[in-house]
Length: 128
Image: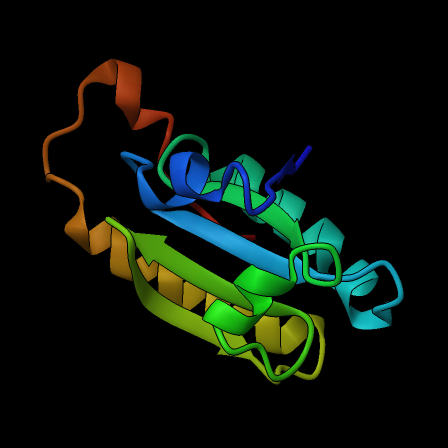
């Protein structure tokens, strides 16, 4: 399940998050948003606690949509320490998104310490 974030909870859940957050700007009328949703859920399950996934209804959160200058939906932003590190928009479907998520996974797997305790070893982020 994806955590739903609003303008009221955005600062706490995204900007102040101790881990990177993949923000999915979507809308109920967006067909591509529905198509990619299962892939995002898979990404969330595979990344465990390394990357947090949240969803924002762009129609209901107009201020955030303007702040992040959305041009199309879905738009995915990877926000770390309050800064946008990756912006994914204009992808044509599941394959484009899968490649973009793989790039994010590789970026963040290289940032992780080389030593993993047995407790955190299971949290490696892997895409099928």
